[in-house]
Length: 391
Image (cartoon, rainbow, N blue to C red; front, top):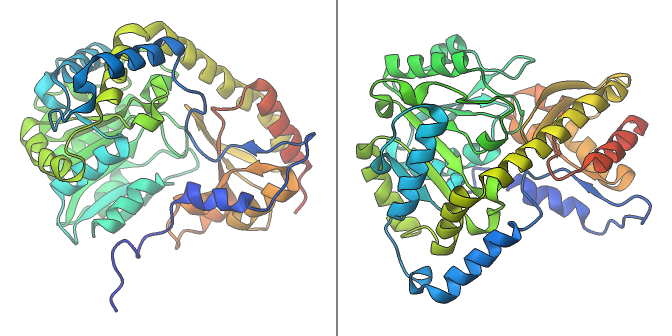
């Protein structure tokens, strides 16, 4: 029997890691520190929840189908906010709403590739991007990064073939945390434009970028929508993970193709989530700014704690948004290390092997820490436990 494309990819990493908790008991004086997933654990702010409740009760439209590419009011508001943030002019018909950012990526890939095509992914990669490419029958071409976790456009150029359809970047990066410099993103755009492929930029963590102003100039380029595809998520900024609301900004011909995928898979994004995203954009700018300040403070706490780990041989490779990406000093492979950390240290994190192709050994020396749900006290506990390890 032939292996299906779904069987050819790996199990969902976060779900796999959660199974490591089965049967493990954590004493009261050493509770589990879960830094495995980059998702808010708290619900949306009360004002937003109340607005969602009123919408659900009072508006019949909350329970009905809507436009496949998203509600007009939300598309218009997002286009306006993208325009303001990136100092550009984006039209509502260049924006589509999706059921989460993973669906946004899947829809774009389905619209621009055929089976056997290729997409370049810098490593360490976001594992759900790799999984979807596997399941779409598209070959992921890994682009190794250096110790700063930044990809090299000229190395990417050498990987482009007649089957290459896109390069996919994530900035601020998952899993590495690093923020790609504007000029680096521009060089990738120029490479994609020159070679006639697409540049996909997943900016799920844009709202927690430490830089002020536009993180890149791609929206300002003439005919940007012939080359550049912007992916976004409302999940992190407004704590809407369970409502699955994401977005795409791209050219209208591409969105017409994407509409076919979205109509077949989900018909339309959920109405309550779309309302929440719109209400959040219109009413919670100051709240989101405070959330960003808190994440940046937690990022600073990671940097402040690193000397204790560096003294034990650890190295910080990337830090930003929700993530710290580290190289560990032990002879044990990171996937075995991560499993043992659960009972021995009360820590659940993800090994670098989950973000690397099997042929790349560097993943065995790396781990990802999703620190966004730890306050400073929790981060201090993490830095108490990690230096005490002995393998």
